[in-house]
Length: 554
Image 1 (tube, rainbow, N blue to C red):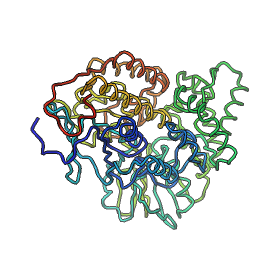
Image 2: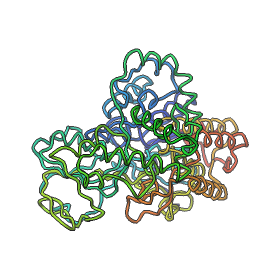
Image 3: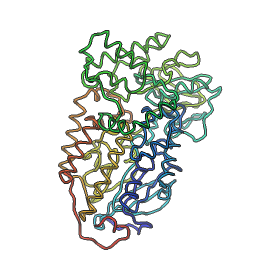
């Protein structure tokens, strides 16, 4: 490849993103291994996805006490959560607390968007350029860009003509949007739309929800965390974390061992009722086979459908809100605070855009096949170009100028979700092909960061300078990941963003690893124990003693 201009800074490792993943990766490489590390972050502060996600109702769907770091018991004991499900502001406060406690900001460059990264095979370095013209070089490039950080704004004709205001939930203004007295149209009824709808409805003169796909949702039963409960959690954190790492989804609870089909109808109904009343993601743990047996899943799907019909008073609206085209939890399963109840309000209406598609956005609002809706504000709750979008938004070029976009033209192909063949010394934290979005994310993040850190340490100890995925190992992993997905009901949700179906033209490939977090972590340990099986490690002859490499070359 052509020689690039000299870098203004040469490092051992460069990390893109300052969310959960980037903060922890900086801490492990800098403070545990003593490497020279820089984090580049497009936002003006820490938080990653949570820096941008500030829309009304935005909060986590994992419970606060385990949607957090486990690497420091001192941190666990010092921080206390206010709510069972933390809202976006509380998550940012937590991550700012982490950044202060571990003095991370001094090695983070904010307001710095990475535009390109190119691998220099001769020098065995990654050359990175930013939007403002900075050039940096590093032995290791680590992407901590998040799975849900590339906003998906649908290309609807006429948007530029709209006279009102429009927002995407993933790029919300830092100042609250005032909906008082406004006619609001909200497009999208995934997790984001389900969170935003009740909050906007409380302010707006009228809210029109444009729904493509009806969704299942479980009540969150959110509320404050009593002091006594916080003390009990902190006293038991070691066991809580161990259970989370042993579970299939990274949550500190286990799935019931019984099949939904092996109990009496009365017992099954009682169990579902108890799970509904408790609320949250634990509903999926009521029986072991809800995601692998369609007949078992039907019992849960029918239960939730009956709940929707009992909550929503207008039978026509209730029927529109009742999902019929996919099994429960095969799309990301939302949890909510009064979502279905909101459709009983006089100032809320529902438009089925599968039956009457949106034709265009007009200066006055949204025109569907059957009607035009006059609006003052449009909210796009249309999600993200998930998992691959954040990486493909950067011009990443590996060996011989191969672009990541070319490598993934037919869908993402990785080894363990950690590396891509042809891109040496580049690690993708929670990349496609890893459990990522099917888990409690901090557990998946910590497992990946710890693995990468140990790998770099082992390379340093052995005098190795390069690691890359063996193309044959990538093929085997992709096949295994496909088998894992097909052993579940997950691929049956054809419109799921797990498959990229929310982005026109995106290859339909099931992107996360569905074999379970605990199983995946065990596979990674086996790979390490076998001398990084499936990776090609080498120690090329040094071209020169470039600054910043001494910490890696042992």
